[in-house]
Length: 247
Image (cartoon, rainbow, N blue to C red; front, side):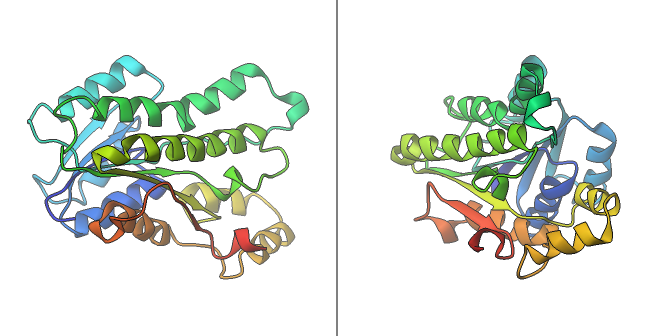
């Protein structure tokens, strides 16, 4: 990964943040986008000076996002890889769902992955030799869960987007894959676990034969899919879920 220019969107927390730290240790040149300026700056303080750029931007604001993306290639250096990690959670019974909620979830979890890819395909924005795109989906994208209709819809959409792009971009030697994590001990997940009963926590843990995951478990999988070690892999949804999806 040394010297490769990698875009991480949704970089300020959770799996995006962990991926940034993982890739930084391998010498990647990072472009980090997130709507949370404070958390972006906190992340940047842990990175080597001159090895990153940060751009605060909300992925639902297309004008601001496009400005950040354009500024990120003003140095004339094309990208070698892209990680889409931005996402929001929604737990709402279907009988209470509104169209606005569905649109809000898709506006964050799915649509920007396509629009950012569109930007990267413009001449000069991505290495003509090829590279790798990695989207973060979820086990909920193919297994489903009660009251998670909106979230599951968005994560299943990411898998479909990935597969379509994998075929479309293969002639350009651009690989497209996604990672589907189970329950990982991010700050958000820990808050959820702390808010529910011990019995429910035990139930969730029992659904993961290898136990709950650590953020770096997912970051390592993303790193692999970005690297040349996976140069013959495209169109794959990789479960990183401690065995959740085999039950």
